[in-house]
Amino acid sequence: MSQPIYSREEVASRLAVSPQLLLRYEQRGLIRSVTIDGATGYDPPEIRRIWRVVTYQRDLGVNLAGVEAILRLRERIEELHHHFHQFSLDLRAAVDERERLESLLGRDSAEAESEDPR
Image (cartoon, rainbow, N blue to C red):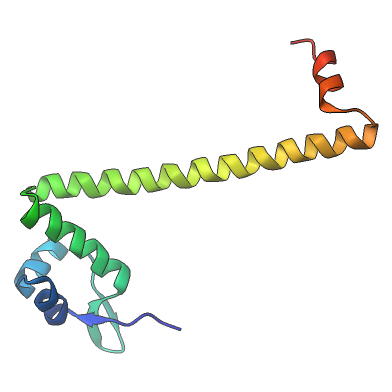
């Protein structure tokens, strides 16, 4: 099921900005519109991004260069969060596998650690 698309005018009206401002954000690469079946607009995740841009600029007084920097940092943080989450899953799997192998060998982890030369 596809997500709904909201027109530029509708989004601008709901956020109390002009459609031209949204076009300016698009030209700066801050947001992206999509065209589906001839209708151009924004999907819900992009509307959340637009809301952030408007909030940073209008409500917090951040200029567009600052908004760009904030958005890049947010994306990088999300990327790092994903990597750390995947690392923790991999680490948990490795620990579980070690415990499984030790139990097959009839050893508990305390015995294995006492034999560890480190």
